[in-house]
Amino acid sequence: MSDLNKLSLAEARDALRNRDVTSVELTEACLKAIDAADVLNAFVHKTPEIALERAKAADERIKAGDAPAMCGLPIGIKDLFCTKGVPSQAASKILGGFKPEYESTVSQQLADAGAVMLGKLNMDEFAMGSSNETSVYGNAVNPWRRGNDDAQLTPGGSSGGSASAVAADLCLAATGTDTGGSIRQPAAFTGITGIKPTYGRCSRWGIVAFASSLDQAGPMTKNVRDAAIMLEAMCGHDPKDSTSADLPVPNFEAMLTGDIKGKKIGIPKEYRMDGMPAEIEKLWADGAEMLGDAGAEIVDISLPHTKYALPAYYVIAPAEASSNLARYDGVRYGRRAQLAQGDGITEMYEKTRAEGFGHEVQRRVMVGTYVLSAGFYDAYYNRARKVRTLIKKDFEDVFAAGVDAILTPATPSAAFGLGEMTEADPVQMYLNDVFTVTVNLAGLPGISVPAGLDGQGLPLGLQLIGRPWEEGDLLNTAYALENAAGFVAKPGKWW
Image 1 (tube, rainbow, N blue to C red):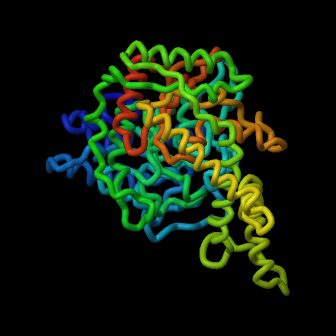
Image 2: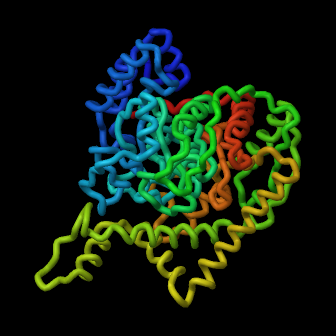
Image 3: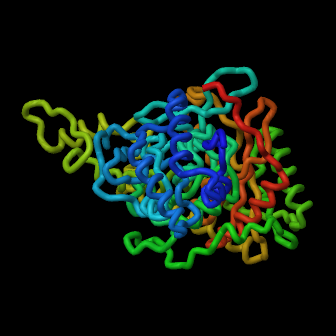
């Protein structure tokens, strides 16, 4: 078999079980692809020795006949996940040289299932960004290009390295994390599938925290079936994470029937934004029609507090970030600034944090500290928490009225060029999260499915939002949408 790195998880799993291929062969094909794709800057810490060791162990396990679905499948791990003995920097200068002595629960569960770690993937610093331009490793690059234009495009953020690596077939799948859209937006920008499960479905233990009440890990894969396979391996109760749900994890793949007859799909009128590109509008309408043709009932719904979601998110997330990032002080681990004679502990903190954090992280820490300060706590932070409760209630009301899933665009545009969104106006960048942040604020599962190309040949995604804890049902609706859309486009190889 040639082009083994181009296989999906499901195809590779079946080929391994049929003894058509070995995990070592799969892994070597991916390692070769990674080495030939340095220009994408997707993999930032390569771990070929670990990969080949795990691949050999997986082959033995498959031979013995006791192998779970993920056994032997080569994947990438976002740099936000702590991996024992391997640099885990959250793409920040302040964590330079940090090699944890422990493994995050999610990456441990994948390892226990026999998955092969190829290395660590690029991302926005501390997961703060929508374009992977805030990384200490430099920009990750989207394998897609506009027509014949060779301008480099963003793969989205913060899981940009994960999206780029999966889209370019450097790995069969990758882990991502999603605080306000950081799995779904890059998935849409690169023509892959990404699901953020219900808050509490995957353990957050060992994942570097950005905003603890919003962060959630999830898989980034080549299709919906792969998302179902990998999500099952990532989920499960973890006593080390107090927000982890003690619920059984279903066999998500077995729930993929593609039958959505009689399902109610809501179309929220508040997501029709002023100035939305006609291509996004058309894709959304086409998606609704496809689901209708598959037997679903399409209904108009209202989520009245949607317009307050972005401002509420950009109060709550920075507030939690400023609290979480207070631990990076140069004392116990990571980088410590060079001190001048006579400098005390205050100067050490100030210099370390000023040198170690990039501009976007500094901006969010300052915003977060401001909204939590004595005079502004009620005016901003408490008010944002109340708005969050109202947004959550909007969704509860819609689901109580019998809606099974909600269809929206995933992003307000296709991938934009690196450097096109200037730092002078960070709000422009924040608007990329307009369709995704509500899902995090309400703790719901959401999935982005590639559904078409824009006029310049770039992928566009549609988002489906599901009921809490019903990822299986959501994946099945996404599977029906994927089948109807028939998206099979791949980026032309230029790297």
